[in-house]
Image 1 (cartoon, rainbow, N blue to C red):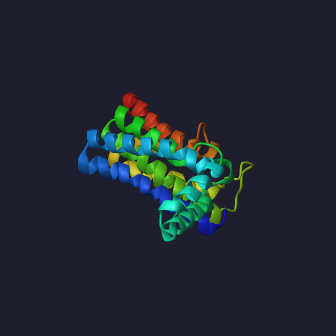
Image 2 (cartoon, helix red, strand yellow):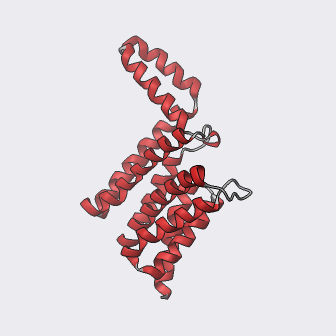
Image 3 (cartoon, rainbow, N blue to C red):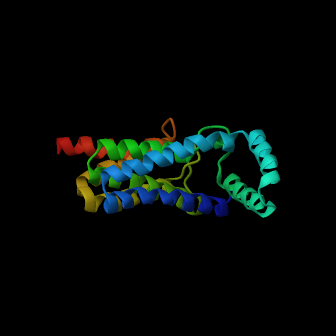
Length: 208
């Protein structure tokens, strides 16, 4: 994926920050409702993203009833989505579904500071790791990740978590998130990153 496409992808990924923002502005219950609605819509629309033949057939039928300019805009949007979709994601569950599922779990089960921190770290840290790794990464590992990208994730994690949970827990959470991001823990790093950070911070908080 080119740097331009990577930047587009991460710009879209940064919309995940709407979850912690919603938590601060509207509280836990409304945030869970909004995440749940988003997850439902993502799941309903997912087959149309994956099954291209079905999607094209629907567009052909829509041309009978919908203005050609509208169809053209849809096709432009599809082109942009294809540009930021990694090859292994084209025929499997999309990243935003995993992200929404993990966000719901984290907001539901963990205290506010932990949930907000975990979701923010997973969003910002992942974006910085990809951008720094692609542009500045010089020390590569066998899985394609870079030392520079992992360091960017870790430092972003500490910066986000420190004001929320204190430095010791911030270090623990950042290490957990960096490991999850580095190894792309299953089922998807957009799912495992949030849970790894939240679990690490919460459990460490019980011990410290």
